[in-house]
Length: 472
Image (cartoon, rainbow, N blue to C red; front, side, top):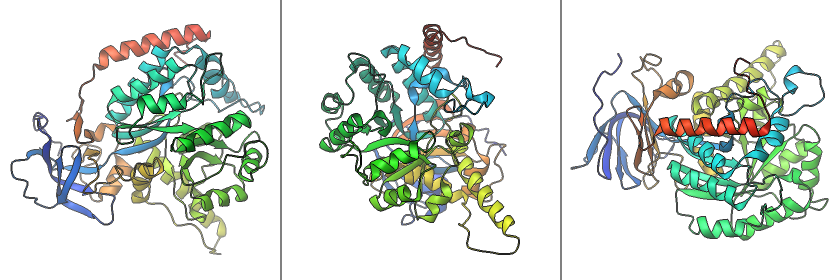
């Protein structure tokens, strides 16, 4: 039955125990528990197990809750939050196919019309509000693919928003529109020195290294990234010549001689890539982020889940753009599982009794791993987050398993992935600090911020000369 207990206040100290929940640690060495406790001191997990003796630690009652690591989104364009649902039916770009959804398209409207009119204050409120929304949904870590660096002032606004959101973030320093005064990629030296002099902080830095920008820019951005010891991220999409371009770069041909794959590289989408490219990515130890709902809706190509299985690889999951699709982790997990199972199931049906080898069907625990452990590893944060492990920082989500859409629970990973949504996210903890408590996001004036976001939206549509069609 639903829990009707009046919510108590969150712990006031920095030592507390999450008591009596079903714990999915996502760490095989730590194990899972039907009923267990998680002890937090400061920002770290110090013990996990049944009936811990925790002395005078304050208690969070987790009975009827499923306790999981915070979710990780490895690719989200936070600056676009004011454009939510603007392009629900759109394609990535107008490919000349005559498809009605090709106009308006994401590329032509968001990148060519809206992006150039963003002011630093628009970057700030969009990134802050989008970050708080994801925090409310249990996403404790994000890679903000921030393609809005028209000036150093835009850059600083994007970083300040991530800091003020108060969750774990990897700031993705990508390109802007190339106007006079734009400083990408060379401003990375200043950004690294002023904002990220230490790697031991809640917000870290990733270098954007888009390969479609021509030969010189990716060569410089990847070289700078390695000089500054930064991970690298880049979109790789096979349509419109992207596959042949990537093959050229992987071979070291053309002008981009310094674009060298390695375990410090995260590639986003990887749809429509050649077998040669895939083998090069695997052999180099590079990582792949899949934005499955957006890839299916916006004609990026079939999400390459089967290809990754064939090569012994696993993806992380990402939301991409809220212009077209929601950014909650439950949608990402369900989409990945269902499309993979659809492809494999249809292949089995088509074999009509002949049973050649097919990839194993993904299960709920697999996609839960993609959304937690893999995401942290792909952002070079696996030593700090991604699983409930003694010594790691306490990025923890309590999911209400007594709610109408879940009770009774018979399989905890199944309940999380197959049944839950953002309304089940009851308590969210980042580095030991409680950010959402009993369904209430803390330390955020959402009414005021919502009005500021609407004001930004109104300005952006007016400045871009685009009419807002509320009724579609």
